Length: 529
Image 1 (spheres, rainbow, N blue to C red):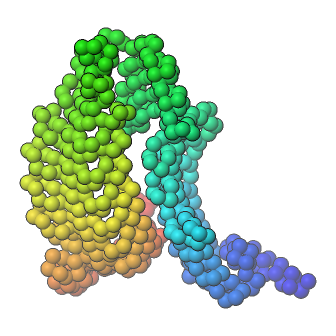
Image 2 (cartoon, rainbow, N blue to C red; image 1 turned 180 degrees about the horizontal axis):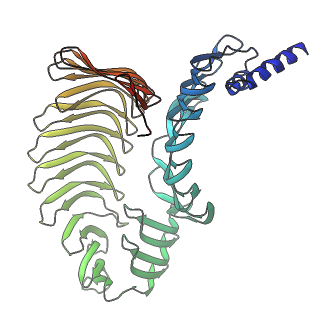
Image 3 (cartoon, rainbow, N blue to C red; image 1 turned 30 degrees about the horizontal axis):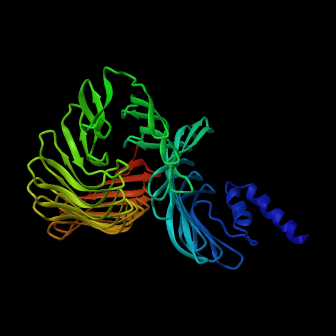
């Protein structure tokens, strides 16, 4: 009873001050059984009953304002980021009890604004193996917008979902591990209005149900219905803007009806060998001009070659196809002028193994490998004079590993590593006549960064926290004389900023408070003017 009365008196005292919220957070949210001393306008550390720090950061008028960290009772960081007027306001990172990153979220004035990354751990034989990116969703003003992505542990896309004003709206797609779309959903105002299973095989490994292929922009390219491995139902071909180019109906693999949406503009033509029954070639024509993929067959009626035509009827690519009319083996891609644009191999209609791309003058523009349609391994880029410009490493279609960028004179201008398309670890970057060095964490500058002139003298040094400058930043003249001092609190200007002449004399002092200019050379700024 005495303990409860003491707590009540303490909370009553807190309510009479502007930092009541901090006391309440300390005693309830952090699970502390003792009251910590709170500085309503300064740096605070709050502790668990066992003496382990629970949270720490700045307060202003009794409310969290500035950089804050919270901890698990074990001492492992639980979350960290900046607050402004007690609202989350920066990139916040949340961690699991094992210290692995679990979420990265950017906030503006307490609202999610930017990409929200969620990470999970893979488990093998009842043991945590590795952390991987599980989802990536964009927030605007605390609501989901645009395309959201969900991933398999391998890094391949498992599902894409379209959002509008915080609700699922439009098409969502589920993929298998090979990258093929296997389910298409339609959402209206966050409700699923349809679900269609596509690109499936029956228990005997034969195509069944609806099969679809897509253009790079996500539009349906071809839609067919199969039964027992044979075409059985409508078979439609569309342009990349959704215009139907052909509409045919099959039963047991045989055409029973053919209707083209515009017989004058779009027509699929099939030619036969002399026997009149063995197919020789088939493809789409627009106003008698070949467009898209045309398949050629040997005298047994087996597909052996494909040629792709552009809108003007010029050949843009050619190569072998398999018995399912999928690109396979070595293909060549052409410019309109007829020169090689690229060459490489396909497997099951996906780019695979080595590919080389060319400039119109015949020199190599880039080269590297694909694995089932995704960039994999080392890729190199060159200028039109065959000078190496860039070397990058990929896995599962994402930048992973060392990346080096070169100037036209073969000088290294950027060097560092990527992890899942984000810069990670130590980087060196040259811009103009200066070179900066430091560390990236999840694509954001973190820790001490230094920039030097080309003579090796220091140009700038300062600390970054999750991409934001923090603390004292110094700038120097080429001879090493201090040029400017800047101070930040997690990206916001704070304190006295000073600028010096080359002889070391001070000529300008600007005072900032919470990112606002309040004095210049000691003279208070009248913001009413």
